[in-house]
Length: 64
Image (cartoon, rainbow, N blue to C red; front, top):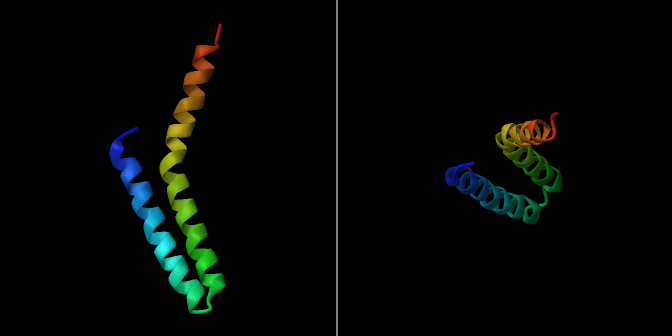
């Protein structure tokens, strides 16, 4: 895992938080929820290959 991935996740988190707060204060809670959900899905697509690699390494570790 590279440090750039951590910075990208942090940047998305900050951006989503700002957009969500702006939308909540303007009375659009539904849009704020959808923005948060989209951010979560985006970050999960970045992290999913690393999780798969972790489970593969664990499986290979306990293989006989």
